[in-house]
Image (tube, rainbow, N blue to C red):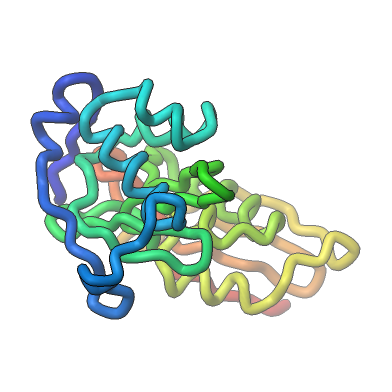
Length: 214
């Protein structure tokens, strides 16, 4: 079980002092460091403001919703800057295990501000994990899905785009199975099973998805 640390106030600044290292695949040479207006520069400004517990500085580079989101992160701060893919910049963990494939924090940068923050979630009910994943799929939001589901599960689910005019899905709840729970969505002709793993203390995630045919 990984060690969970609730962050807030001075505790954040004390526990989260670190040197961030860019991922090798997206590393930026020191001689070509990004400007502060680039997505990576904006994201790192918000990250540093969060580490310093400085909401005023954070508000200069992020929307109120984004500030509230990052300051509500329940785990210790990620210790690795994983680079940016377009306008989305990620900070990931190397020293703790958290639920979901996001593995930390993802920031969406629009212009000179972070407009949305995705984050690994500590969810204590299997049914909540399942319904949140379904909602993310329905909205076509992969990053939201990665907050509470493993990368493989998200890849499986998003192979098919949700069709609001297609078959109707009906949530049937969750039942115990070996090593966890199976949360089912039935539809005409079959069912989708979300296999949930974890514990109440460590948090649950959807680890895989399978399908049944009538």
